[in-house]
Image 1: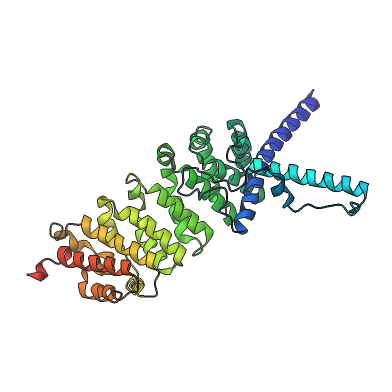
Image 2: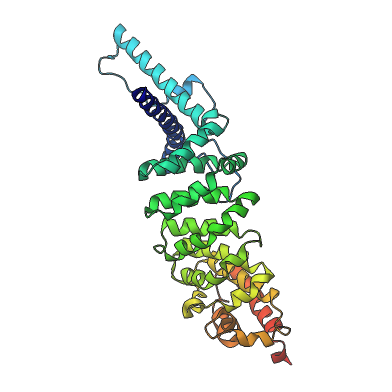
Length: 379
């Protein structure tokens, strides 16, 4: 009996593992086809899940006309010689196989196909695989499957109810950068949900520390910034990042264009909240921040940075908070803005920028600095 029981448990484990692997295979195969298609210049089937609600796009043609099928590349066996009866039959069979394969891929890529979404039972198997497996390649495939399904609003609730949030968050402790990136992507997709955000807030400090200490401009760093940006869309959890604002300004100054833009999105969320204004003004900023206002800097970077400064200027009552201004230290964003002549010189240096929108934004920024920050100097 003992031996039979052991065999039964092993068989059950193999069945569960095989089911989970098949679920992952279905999802990752469709993702691989999508990547290949995007590499060829197509728009792909899945929108960026960082900010979307799960909408998918299908670029496959539904036209089954023979003229379209005849344009597909068909492999013919070497014995399918033209002009012979056997060759004609072999070529017909090859065309039929190619047509069936094309339709199968078309069905799998369709957003209406059941193969693109896992059932709750299948999601449970994939979560079990994430929880029990220690193999990086298995974790990567399983997390990709979860990330694809988390792009759908109804699946975010299902994954949470299955206990998936702490299971995925536990993967953040791994040292494998690829696996950690995939886990951050899953959490990012799941965070587009109020209840999920409430439960994910306990991991924000860990994500923030990992993000600022990761290799500069790395995929892990960008994935962490996207997750923090989603978590700060509302004002409810922004205070958790109050002590890390200086680190974000450091990343902004040192990072490439993609990192700069992602940091600015996060800082813009904070700047729109009046309760975070003092924390932003008290943050230490690198001395190189002023050098970003030059004609060589990207237009979008300049516009977003000016928007942040405008929001801070609008939210902070300079005259009413004059006693509190003594609490800001030198090198802070407050002193960067307070030194009107230095700041204005750097901003006015791009008033001759070739882009009209940049020039207009600069003019508005300088006007607000003069009217609101330094009203006494005009008297």
